[in-house]
Structure formats: C-alpha cells, structure tokens
Image (tube, rainbow, N blue to C red):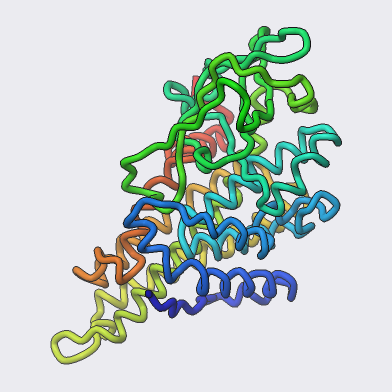
Length: 392
C-alpha cells in the first residue's frame, strides 16, 4: 500500500495565527487521513468506488457538523476549525472532503439554520454520528448555474406535500438516508423539504462513467409523486436565499479544501525534485524546476492567508457571499495550476497512481465547476465591485 510521506508547508507561519485547539483538530484529522485514507484511496479511485468505512471514521474525528452546537451532536467549533478539517480531508482526496462538506454544510447547516426544533432534534445527532447520511438536491438536468429556473415542485395535498421532479450531480445520493431538497411551491416560491429514503416514488440512481471524484458516490434524485409529511418542510426560510445560504457555507469549506489538494501536490513535487536525478544532479537544482516550486508555494501561501482572514470574518459574521466566492474561485484555480505544474515536475511518473498528482488534478476539474463555476464566481465578484448585474 502507498506510504503517505506528506509534510505540512507553512511559509508565512500562519500557524502562529491559530489556536492550540485548531492545531490539535488539524493534527488528528491529518493522522486519520494518513492512516485510513492514503493507503487505499488510489485503489478505490481506480475502481470508482466510495469506501463506506470512511463514514464512521469521519464521524469519529468530528468531520460531520464541526461548527454545529454540541447539544445537537456537532463539534461546536469555530469556522477556522471547520476550514482546517476540510483542508486536511481534501489533502487526502476531494471526494472525501465532498462527502463531509455535503453532510456538514448542505444537510446539517440548513436543518440547523432553517429547520424547526423538532427537526434539529430528530436529524442532527444522527447526521453527526454518521448513523444518517444526507445529500442536497438543488441542481437539475436543465438548471445548474440558474437554480431559480428549477422545475421540481411541491403541491399542498392537505395532510402532506406531493413532490415531483429530479435533481442531478448529487454527491452522497446513492447511499443517503435523507435529502434536503429545494422545490417550488404552487406560488412559485422555493422551499426546502426533507425527503427520507424509503418514501414511495423516491429513487437515487447512481452516476457512472466519471473521470473525476471517482472515490465519491454521485447520483440523481428522482421524485415521482412522493408523499412528504408536512412536518418535513423547513419552516424558517423562503426563496433562493435558502439554498444559497447553504452554498456559502460549502463554498467556504471548499476554499480551504482546495489548499489541501495543492499542498499534497506541492509536497510530492518538492520531494521528487530532490530525489530524481538527471544530468548528474537532482532536478530541483535546475532553474526551471525551482521557478515552478517557488511559484507554487507563493500561491499556496497567498491562499492560506486569504482563507485565514475569511475564516476570521466568518467567525465575526462579517464574511460576505462575494468574499466567499472570491476565495473559492482563487483556491481552486490555484490548486489546479499547482497540480498541473507538479505533474510536469514528476514527468511521466506524474500520471501514475504511485503519486497523487493526476488524481488531484482530475478531482479539481469537478471542484472548479460545482457549487458555482469559475466563471460564475468571477461574475459575482464583478457584480459586487461594479454594482452592475451581468446575469441579466
């Protein structure tokens, strides 16, 4: 099995800005990834299979709902702690981070923020422990970047709602016990509703043939006259601000997570450059290789500082959606560039499963698209700085 030789890189001593609790949490997650993820992730990616045993491990290290209050089973951590967990998980694999990110930010967050007290008590402790796994239904076959055009709908039938429609590109769907689904009511208002596996007419066909996020389970949500109890409606939000609030939390996690993928690629490239000998000396001694490595660590450092500052703002409830968009776009674009340059340093070995580079590169091609594409996040920043809406 593969040996995980990763060493953390902190060029600007950002650790000095972290608390002891932050570093303790990060260390425990890193050790779990080294022990339980790295030795098997390449094999599971080759088989395009999600390792179900990771679920219990993720729950044990507190990766499900880290910032949800302890009274509901969460970790009660701050936002920087959450970000550090996502960074360490994505250092292992983007699919692993996606599993935890969906559970935390797209399932537990809306139930905690928009749900009733009964819903919180019923679902959150089981989601935190991994007894329940969840997924998030927003994207549709014909409505991705434009979720307001969704066709999935609910109709009031007196003692229940009747749900019809479909969602696609849904992480965790094939094994999820519950789905937080966004649908339009009879007045065209977007509402959130909790759908449970086993409800008649609800199915979750798996998506096959992916070249990216291969160690992550992806599927569809199909609703054919599904009867959903009225108590499953999220009572405390109406409109698109509901799902967008969830996405803000998830995008924040991605901004940290992508740094983890970049760090893994950089760490592997740096080590390889010192060990690989050509023309009588290590390739790390050649100017072009040093240029690549120096630019990698510079961009990683900039992203580390941006995410730390964003986490501080988020802890103070001052982080704006546009700031989160900027960080998500920057981190993922940075990680993609680092992965591509790291592949160059590894030469032909960079395409093999002996090194993590190509796996991260393929995964990041999904991360740069989901939860807001690179271009959409650029337009969010453009709208924020000009006041002119390019979406209309």
